[in-house]
Length: 311
Image (cartoon, rainbow, N blue to C red):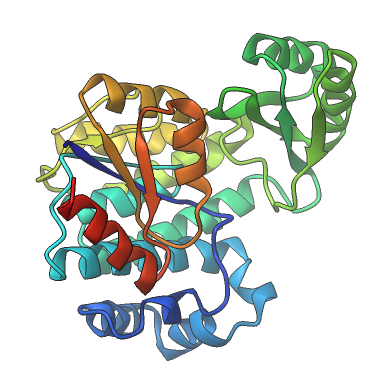
């Protein structure tokens, strides 16, 4: 058996997601650290909402890091084995770096809140858009975007699974690309409820702001290999890690390649560490040989632990 862990990004959050881990060790420690850094109101938002506030990017990003790291700490405290490689989807890469000891949790929370602010400021709300394209080859999606751009920006930005690509860019260009993808045979092409065109080249101003902010953050050599989004590489040098995080903000998430790279390394089991089950589903679609399990709550964490002990 060879274990990997993956950490979800925005979209998997839900009011009360931290309560799902109640009763597990280390949960109160992580909650306490989050409260000291971002305040009692932030922790209350995790438990009580409202959902509209939790879904604001500025709150979602630190919330997902908190929940993902909570699941990781609980897993290790219960005797769960340390993964041999980790990765995170978009924002989840920051949680992966925290789990690997490269970024302190207390440093990561204000960092991802800054990242969220920078991303939202890069493209005013209402001007950008994202859409999910289903059952269309990657090359066809890229061709549709090229045809639909017409001097504007629309690009493939998340390669989530075979036949599942997310595009992003200026709202009008994304609308044209949706039509172009449907004309090429996409089973579905639908706009997503997001506030900015994440991972598109329109995020370059945010990446520049993030570069300056990252200069103030201490990053250590990871104790666990972390496969990054932008290059699908493991970086050990702190300066290279910072550079990859900067470029990630305005570059596609290469999730299919990340999971295939893990399989090539001999990974047999993949745990999704945090709320939701989206990544576990994507892992199975990318490589059905991999056994993927969520750690979305106390019950699934204990079940995964029993499964691995019997492997």
